[in-house]
Length: 382
Image (cartoon, rainbow, N blue to C red; front, side, top):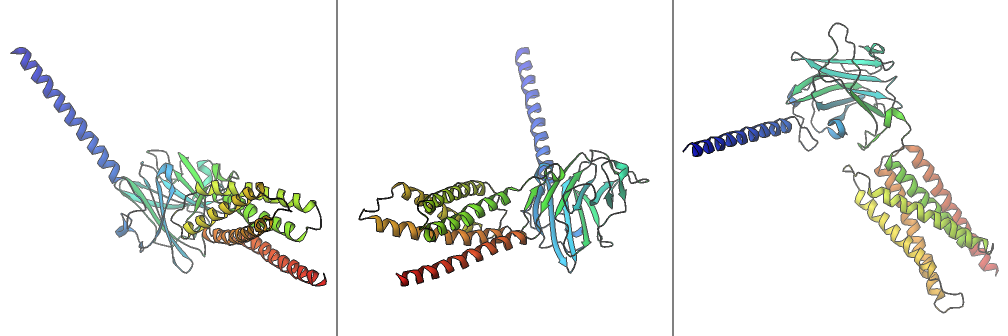
């Protein structure tokens, strides 16, 4: 009987222990769920407390490591509205605006809550130490009475509006040390716990890391674009010109053609590999861009294989091979040029890249037209 009673007691204790563990796990799960925010939510959780209309804002995951969510919109002439959401660790959250991605010299909007009261201040970051971060100073023109910070369900929501035609292209995010906020008397900003710099395109919503606050890191989407532009969009068209219009320079034209097309093919493959690793970010026409890119890759690969199976000049099938090689190459080049422009449009790339490639394409078209006219008159003379 005693053994049975002891066994029942142990079983009861195990059941109670399991119950408390399950309840604790459920509570943690619930807390984690309530403190989350994402761009899949139709509206921001504190929309009723934000001092401006927050509907139809664009939403991006600004800093995944710290779970920063940024919502923004051009809400009027020379007016931009922002809502930054981040986990509430009992400290401040901040977003700075910079021309080059450096923390020093930037102006930041900083928000925190203390004893249930929210505070939003602008700081001018003259240096890295707290005494070099000046409160109520900066180059941003904050719209009066349109700034607020709210703590809700384990997250801080920092909302503000700035007057500008277009915000500066680099955003700097910072999270303060856990449990510390600027004191009410001095407003001295404690050294951040962690920070990140992002180059940001407000039109496309594409952001890329500027490691260590502008250490010269080159973004992956731009690497992809430049490789594709140089490989498919520049070298292949130039290689075609050498083969079609400089045959009198035997055998120089052949080796030049092979070398140029070979380098272009390698760069094009690198661009395709890098392109498949990029985040689409919900951009339009990405599927079309990818499809054309794959088609160009397939045709370029067939061209390389065709060279390996190139028949002798005296062969009866040589003329069919020439027809195939020439026309597939022309189609690939035209698709490649069009796809470069499509890619630049999708990425909302800066105008110097678009203008530079546009000038190259125009010069190439004019050169091809001039060479074709010359060939026509040369054939007539013969």
